[in-house]
Length: 150
Image (tube, rainbow, N blue to C red; front, side):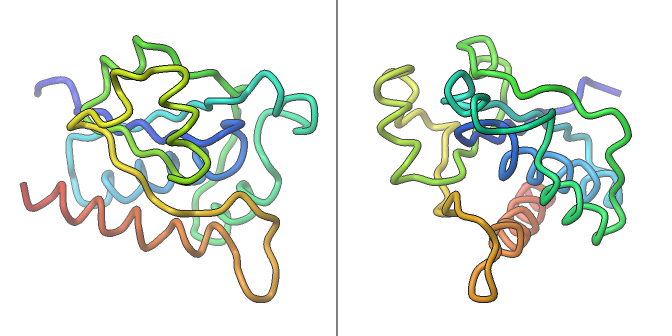
């Protein structure tokens, strides 16, 4: 079997939104027998790590657990590199208004690359009105469906 294709999920701190999307994507692809893997990185990990505690958000872990996905040994957040972009078949930035300027500054030749797409999931704490993980889930489901049909 050939190496799996790679989806790269990008947020600011690689702590919350991108980590949830990564693990959900992997599980959904496994269930469908798709030859895809995922990774996640951040565009502002250095400053985000000053406020984020531990390797992954407890909200992300709990949201994944609600969906039957257990994270046993989470890694620490990781900053995006050019190599990450080059090895990815799809690059998904979770919040266009937040992340497009960061891409323009850090990786200007990748801001509008054909493998890059942008979603609009805000980096906010869950509330009764909005839970970022509930906003991410249908986007990941749609991506998996799109990839399954290509």
